[in-house]
Each structure stands twice: as C-alpha cells, then as structure tokens.
Image 1 (cartoon, rainbow, N blue to C red):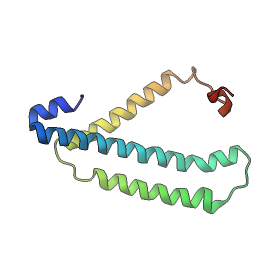
Image 2: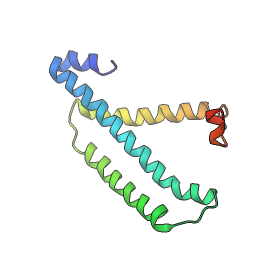
Image 3: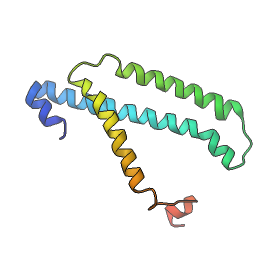
Length: 121
C-alpha cells in the first residue's frame, strides 16, 4: 500500500500497479542477493568457529565467486533505473537503516547458542 496508492495516483492504474510491483520485486530481489552474499561470506568463519576441517575450494573460493556474481547482478539490476523505479535508491538504504535500528534495539533480548533453543527440543 505504501507505493501502490501514490503510483496509481500519479501514473494511472496500469502503469502505477506495474511500477509498484516492479519496485518491490526489485527491492526484494536485491535483499535476497545481499542475504546470500552475507551467508556466503560467513561460511568460512562458521567452519573455523566450529573447528571443522577447512576445505578452501568449498568454503572460501566457491562462496566468494558466487558472491562476486551476485554483486554483479545487483549492480546491473540497479543500473540506469528511471522514475518511478529510481525510488529504490532511497528505499534500499532506508530499509537497511531501519533493519540496523531494529537489530540494535533487540540485541540483548535474543541469545541463541544451539538450534534446540529455537525448536524447544
């Protein structure tokens, strides 16, 4: 609703709905790729923390290569967007800032050491 109403108002029903869905689809895709990049980059640290045998090709080189490809995909997804989709240049940093504020506010309320604490087993 945050983008549908203003975009339909300014660009008409068909263009406004399309642009609104394209905007959120692009934003969600970007954040999914950022999530996967963060996961790839944390794999080696997780393996080291768990004191498992480090396989450089599987745990460092392959995840880094995948992260580079995802960063290229993000770059070309955001390259040359025009109005109204260029609103995403404001939306993404705002979403990240809000997420950091929420994480900072809840940092002491959640402490999970094992998966059993989450599942209740």
